[in-house]
Image (cartoon, rainbow, N blue to C red):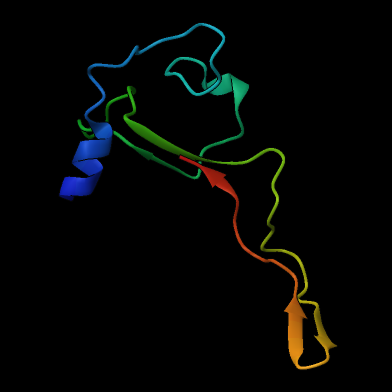
Length: 85
């Protein structure tokens, strides 16, 4: 793993579990299915980093690109993925 990911995963000084927090380990049922899960120990059920889609996304990859000309400017809708780490 890269140094950057190891730094993100070094969260020992923070609380590990908050009962009503949808982003805490053990509360996965409160969020959408994950896109990616990373665990320090391979095959471990305890994850260190999860990527999940936002349930109220601002951006969307399934949207058709809409382009509009406004004088010398082009206006283009925002397209992309809206995910939570």
